[in-house]
Image 1 (cartoon, one colour):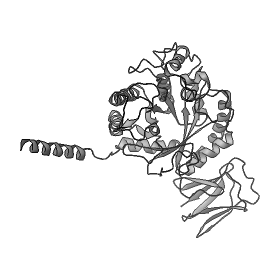
Image 2 (cartoon, one colour):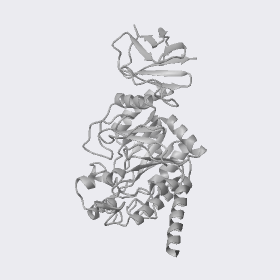
Image 3 (cartoon, helix red, strand yellow):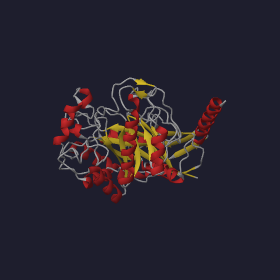
Image 4 (cartoon, helix red, strand yellow):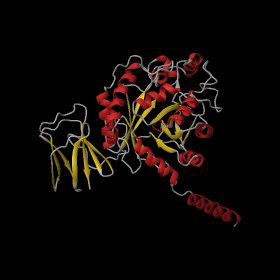
Length: 432
């Protein structure tokens, strides 16, 4: 009887514990942070680490099969004396970007901040002996730029992660999974409690171990306990799970799967973000000259906004800490465009109408902006599904009035005699 009673008590305790774990309910501060995040629209993604020295992207250790102990020697001569947090933040602001997401730790396991949880970090393991992320955090706070930290779940070198180990019962056979989970929690605690201006955590690497127990309930719970307003996102290429605050799409617009990364990902109700590289590399690649033009970047930005998503554009700074001129020159052009046309992007929402052959539309209150990025074949732009009465239609660039006709099926805006902007002709509609 005692044995039976004990078993019953254990089952009851388990049931009570399960019942106690209620679904994630975002706080009012978190919901406000989500709303603000949706209004920012344009962010700067930065992949920077000791891999930059080799000039072959952030996967160079893995791709070249460099032994971990040999790769670690890169830290001995990583000394980015030209890094200037003020220059980086000023560069982002000039480009029209409202937030920065930067790699705090990538798959190589090297921490780009002054962590106490491992000596393998930029302060203790390099001759630089400074914490660039602290300088960046302080400058972001000063200049009103939101800061998000990219954080890798995957680690190619730590023994407790045991990269390549088979997974049994949710854990790597050869590693110490509990130790690794604790290590991540401790580092995340440092990032959230020590660094000012941090507003988000951008996880990556889940896809390396889809059948492991990542303890997301504990990790997400810890983050929201430390700061309920922080936004949590995970680049797992799947539909968001409980505890996440925004949904991301890697190198694809929401709903697309040209990369093949996310065959089963559906769009949820969370704020959306798409990320893309300015060339074909995330980390610094000295041979990658496939630079996107300012027109391509603007089109990506407005296409993301029209689908109700932010656009996070990545650069890979050089190992000395400088941002290469090809990036600064192109994004200066983008910044000039945004300075003139920012009202059609910032603070807007998308998906008011589906994407059209001519482009997309964004909306802010009683104003709609039609972004005509492809010249229409007909002498008009047709906006479907617009039932509200349209009062006024003008070109955003000049304020010149355009003729239009509103029908039950939508609005016809006539473009006879109008010079079509080769980058983006923005038509501003005011409705009741």
